[in-house]
Length: 402
Image 1 (cartoon, rainbow, N blue to C red):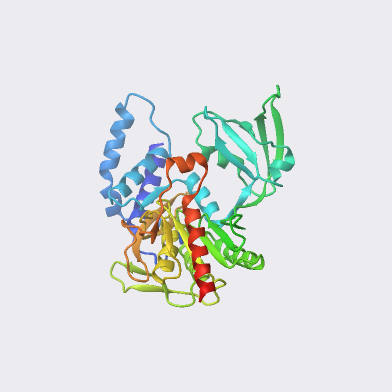
Image 2: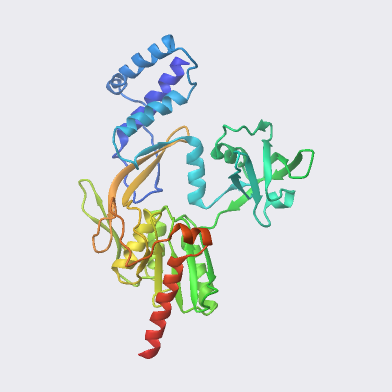
């Protein structure tokens, strides 16, 4: 085991020396490291690791983790010394989920996976999905996937990765169903499952106002935002609410595309890198919603790429931000995909809004502050959306009087 662990650790730690070699804009740029032969000097730097680990192997009273746990622990510890919360090492399983989320599609069965009060894994099939067609019902409890029993110590990620797989392959689920004595076994053929990043509707409160919720900035978001604007325009709306609450970010390119749907010219953001000239990202032509009155909802969960969009629309005075101060993540991470399907996210730059306001560590201040209380949550009310509707109605009344 020692020789195999040694080879893997040297390979991955050498990758840490390559932080500055790539040049790409924004979170989600995928890079493949090609330097697989560390120098003798690089190997010698980690001699103390092997000195330490050999003592552990010889003297530790207890179970010693098997590969690749020691490797990942060493890499994670090395990255932690940078003291940057966004420069991180991501193991293969969460990296696979992350990539699928940003791509907006994966091979699966089309079911939501949640946890019950006692940690049980509960499935809820999506409408018209392979899971629903195969007979999975809402609130079914997952007992086994193929030959692997579901144990309480499994993470949700572990379970999801068991269910997902190559398109057109089969997966067998054993389920426990309320009021059914025997286990229910279903065989499902995996298909391409798409995960929309945008949903939209005409607001019930006012048929003149359209609501667009952007959950994440993925490879699909540009097409989806265009489809939403077109659908709402055809429905006769004259004003729009864009909801970026709890949107943790995603791809920079998608953020520029979305901003460009509402702006006719100018800059979306500036990017500063160590030792390089400032770079600007210009608004793209052809926006579909350049004139409609607009508001943007934000909160403490609005971060990264969603702060780019909010900051651009605010600085261009295209839309007021309504809600609460945003998270404050205005940095750029390159994502290096490593040889074992893990990845390294490395901070390489900082973002500024069109008026050069710093996002990182500060966030964006809403133009109209509206706090959601615990009472609001308990009652299912949304004062931030209500304030956005009131604002747009006020704008409409002012327009009529002119």
